[in-house]
Image (cartoon, rainbow, N blue to C red; front, side, top):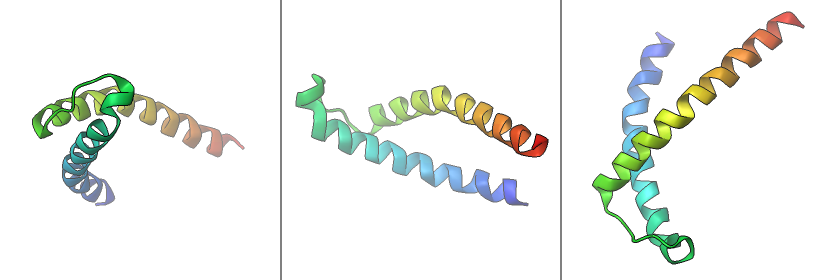
Length: 71
């Protein structure tokens, strides 16, 4: 049942992450050299970041759970 609630919280977390991405892009756009972008573009950026980061988090979680069971 815990996995279900994790999945349910991932939805709203995605929209909040996209909103925060849009805010930070607006704040640092001059320093980074990008144009500030809107919410829809920040959703696309967030999807890309999640697709890149999620496998790495899964690999670290698997390796730390295996490491903890061996010792």
